[in-house]
Length: 112
Length: 425
Image 1 (cartoon, rainbow over the protein chains, first blue to last red):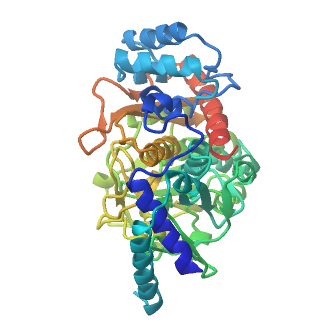
Image 2: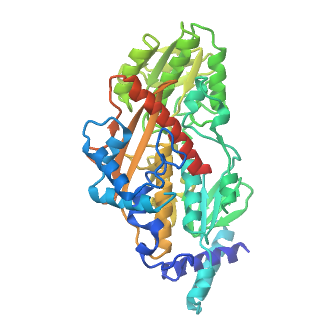
Image 3: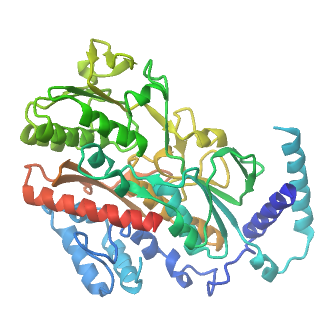
């Protein structure tokens, strides 16, 4: 039984490596654009969700905010050289293109 | 390698060969489920299990963690200082179970990276297509002469939260006013670089408010430390005369202890403590060494894009066990690394190449019951290593502004609620 189950693992892996493995819930597993959770903006935004949740409070929720508003806030943090918050210190390290991708992703995703 | 394992490996290779010849349609392949095993139920492992299941709903995701209750280290210094109850640090795995993750409450005792199997304490084995190890740290017992697991019952480390946290708190509560508390800090790297100094701040808060004739001595194997200007400013401002620190240059490194009489020895002197908190030198958790993913430093080299082991195929390593500097060994880092690792595994299983990104870290440290400071960092992971982005990150402003430090204390509490909800909820 152990041997059979281990063997199936290798079979699965071999198929995955050959590009045959798939996740049927995705419309097109060959296109990153078709898998929103795996695109560049989603990946960048993983750093946000450790602190920001729908519960809000001392760290505001990012839900239901338009992309333009999120983008403007992040660009303001980036521009304010003498800002004192964690967000100022972090946004100094993100490019405008990163901020565009994050804003677009967060605005279309209820739970980043 | 045992005869049994050898036989199994030959059989596996044989069957893979047969499978390669078989005409399996893509539809048949789609019905096969990737088997993903995660070892370690802390901020790295629990987050990885959750996001793997979320991104790959058809995969089987198994989380191996011996304990049914997890006690979080962040905020546990508040418990030691009597400002928070240990119960608020306790999290379970029902939330992950409800998301379809198999939780196995056993210790992973071995990994065979060739056969792709994890051995459990009961002797049972799990086969994996991909393995994620998030084993945290283990202590190097004996690195400080006389400091072993028995000594830790007298001179607690409290560097893994739970019973040790409660023990150190009880010892402080039982200490007479006028007593001497001694903390021993190990050389870097260790879990939570600013943690010892947050702990010193909060123990000083307890002494100042409850036992004002008492003192705290920090015997430190480090010369410089995380958030040093902010901590030193706070100690002078909030706790004048309470905290004394001897760094490595001042012969502060503890080389031996004697729990029978609660003494700590440096190269220069013997100190007798009323309460002694010995934080021992550390290495990656034991299973990382069994799996062959740790190197001679005792820690685990990784590819910074996928967090794949640099030493073994199809094994990823997360969190405190990794060599990820300049990313610190923090809960935030482990949680983010887990989400990135899960995303990259999902990309690879979907036929996409792993993709570099920008990473970040934030660590809050309390200075008192209502003031905190933070350190932040932003990192890139291209070119085979993690690099700090210049001009970004850094410390909260100096100047002990009560509004800024009060806001950071509130933000710290919000962060704890969110990250524990995302990890265990």
